[in-house]
Length: 312
Image: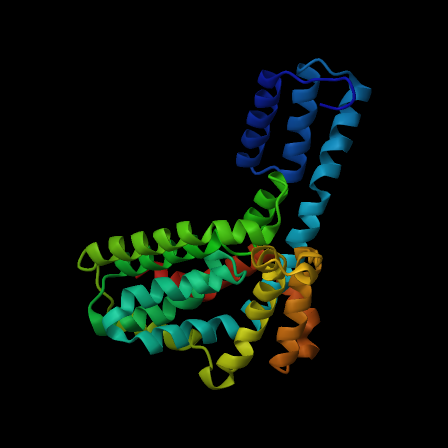
């Protein structure tokens, strides 16, 4: 609706269907959505001028979400490029040990995605660790993949990612409230991933020696990874700042309830503080650029590390 114009629901559905078809036909998503909106508005009874007004009003409603998504991208870039995500994953798997390997792998992927890293990247970060654990504990590659994918999904619903930000904006609530509300469902998702992976432990092909040999070409230099303490700075700062307002409401602390800390500046601030804590402040520009083309980043990781994981 824009002004006094109301577009019919069936016209909106036709416009949406057209946009989806165009996207599947490899047309740029922005142009696809734009064309779908135009066709849907015209079919719904709007004239050309009213259609323009509808497009402008609609774009204004999502600008805030777009800005928050860009802000989240900087945090994800720092976590991915600095090696802090790798440090978190290795620490979790090492501390929990081989007996809880499946749970440790799912939890590690959940934690990495929960702090802002995208699922495909998180899976590829943990994949080499999973192959090593799978070889020692005789866990099939199918079970490992289920554990990583399920853990990633569980973490994704509580992380400051584009989906969560869009949900918070759509329901007009704070991002922190969405993250808190999703915590219990995330735990159920983690539990289900672990159960399914355990049931599939002996199903499918096992990890072979040649799989581990293939990892050496892309092995991460563990000695150059940041320490656990410095790796935790970025996610801890982000979570603490986002939760200050809800904590103030629960505990009736007036000073905290007056703090309206938005994700648009909390996430970049956390990323900057984390980079400085890891003594990598000089690489902030690289980290920011790393997530501007996250799809390319994921594709590069799949080519250099993921193909070895998926092809064997």
